[in-house]
Image (cartoon, rainbow, N blue to C red; front, side):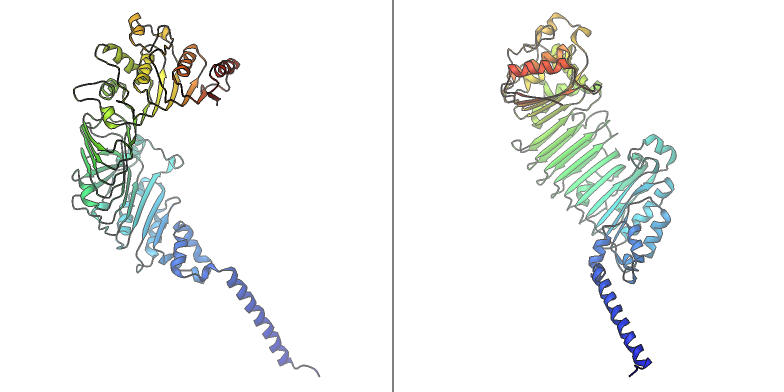
Length: 518
């Protein structure tokens, strides 16, 4: 019996519906992400730049408006003011912002809109994280911008973020190109009760009072300030929960005062890159301090209260040559106020300029009747010494004095600089003055003992006689030495054969020392 057309059509429709159901099931199975609830999808979108999050609206009807209700907004591509305005304008106003991040290249016209974007983000009562980091478009790869170039093409921008109500803000990060062209004012009435992390970089900070940060941020845990200039000569940070404090200044006032106090402080780092002199006064009261790093000129006076037994601190003398002698007197030689160096209990000392050892040698020789050999206990906390040595004239005496003083060091790193004593002749008394330094470029190990020194690295090694003299001296006085690393001159492609032969001879004389040529 022949099947009716209507019955045949019904069967065909049933088959098609079954196939479509299978396709839909397969599609739903493949797209398991779309089935997640909104709050989980928002966490996914939070990991994407807003420009990418907007493109997800093309995926399906499920994603069409999802980005508009995301509590996190992030702009990390080339800065387009029209796109930023449009994205913020099309967000669902009923959903408050949780985080606002803008990390992008910026032209001067774009930067003029930054205050309005920040105010719009800060209007959210639930904002927890605010990040704005911009850099000049023509330096977007290196991130390095000349302030002089920026000033010619950019106007001053004033960011009044601390005048806004930011009760829920936990993390604040601001960084701008050109240093001083961006001004940030911190008024006395500012109050950020939930702020835990503060990071301000490449700007000029105007504090209404020296303790403005402490009074405004009772919950602050870490504070990083990298300032082009500090308009307030006094900085007093004494937040009860503060753990990490970092301050970098490029052109700060000469008579500033730095005070850092707190029972929870673990790390303190102060870097003065081109400051004309150190602060007038440093107060550091941190019984739980574990790391102290000081880069730049020393303070004229200081009061330090820290647990010296556990403190691992680093002092980097990066200072103008005219201030070297002034700092060396405070750091190494006794004066009316005692030695600053022993008071800071420095664990690592770094002298990155060869003029420092030369100035020290001359200073020691000029004050030979006033300088006494230090006791072993005075600098026993120092474990690492790093310096650039110019073995010519007074520099050799400076190096010898340092090694005599720091007899408890465990690691030594020396970068060699060219020169020899015959290029800068000195008097007979100069070479015979210090008991550890012999005449004629020869290092005398008679009164030396570096019994704890176990690792040495020498860089820019060229194989000259005065370098071998110094190297052999170290082998003799470092009785516990286990490893020494020799690196060639940066201009040399490979070591000459004679250096390998000399190193082999040294290894035969001192077989317990491993010599590595890199």
